[in-house]
Amino acid sequence: MRKRNKNIVLENIKLVSAGSKGVAVGKTAEGKTVLVSGAVPGDIVNARVKKSKSNYFEAEMIEIVERSPFRVEPKCIHFGVCGGCKWQNLSYEKQLEFKQDEVFNHIKRIGGIEDFETLPILGSDEQYFYRNKMEFSFSNARWLTQYEISSEENFGNRDALGFHIPGMWSKILDLKECFLQEDPSNAMRLAIKKHAVENGLEFFDVKGQQGFLRTVMFRQNSKGEWMVLFQLFREEKENQQQLFDFMLGEFPQIKTLLFCINSKQNDSLYDQDVQTYFGDGFLMEEMEGLKFKIGPKSFFQTNYKQALNLYAKTLEFADLKGDEVVYDLYTGTGTIAQYVAKKAKQVIGIESVQESIDAAKEHAELNGLTNCTFYCGDMKEIFNDEFIAQHPKADVLITDPPRDGMHQKVVEQILKIAPEKIVYVSCNSATQARDLALMKDHYKLVKILPVDMFPQTHHVENIALLIKI
Image (tube, rainbow, N blue to C red; front, top):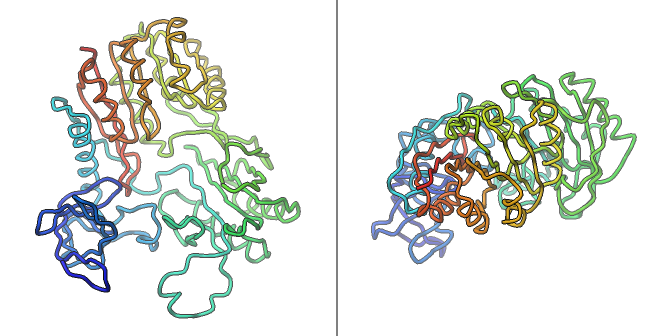
């Protein structure tokens, strides 16, 4: 370890594993843990310390001394600046291995559970172009690289359409390419920017909270039909009509085009009045015979093919015989509930977002499912003794909470109603492990199955099966 420019630099750190949020983990000669961003396991690096804690360092790689055998060349020219695909430089086989290890270690270390089966992680057939929804932001202050800044050139037009720089919300990376959503996503984004610049349309000023073009969202279904949604900071009827008509003329794949006027301080869509300029205002999606109406605010798994696998494995873990009452907590728009309904006597779904519940009810009617009922409310409040008394006892409970996991009150209520079987689907195995620890005196963790929904990132889903002791 040496000091350079008053900064601590750690030398020749061998990185042996992957940690949370995609960092690589190693140790100093003295045995102190080092979490290094920008590197991959197997690298030997020099790294500059960003934070020094009592039992570990947080550091950023400044030099590769020896390259990891697991390194691969990133596909995207924006890798290292864009925060979207932090593992593009790590082989996919190793990505899967480290994701599986992370889930396993969380269950053992945080959950305090030793005896369970770990099924091999379910990898994605598509490692790129797997997302069906992307959102891009406009900015009049394009992110400049350090090289551009030091050159002192006048770059003229600074308009950008792309992603926020991690940790710098007011800075936008102008995307030339992106490998997350299939064509014509890139072509549409580039065409929008070209049209906007050539016609003098004003890009949003995040700091000054002014401008015209704010964000654009592309959404597609499995049939190759596309939705485009513009968020505009203010209304400019002639300019927006020209832009919308241009896009519809250039891209016949667009089946519906929508917009909203959002003049508030954030880009959140859920409280906005979305207007339909062209088409029906929604896309239809099918999933093994089930139909779902996907609107601009709808939640739907962004990796369609892996979502099919996730739901199939959830149903397999539930092992329904046809006479069970199933509770589906955090049901969203009811996709899992309706997927398992064909094998259940009754399914009861609960969700906090009213628009999602409205969609779930509409989907159930659309699919002719009479054995599904849905309720809206804050989970820890609605899922109470009175609710349980008014409904049949759950034989099987499926839960798919947000990243924060389940509130302790919800866990306590699950233990009180004591279903024979619980299938816990999670996008955050750390909070899942915390919840499993609260249930381990009453339920045996039988098996887990990690599912990779997001290749090139450190994120991983996990399905856990619990049986009442």
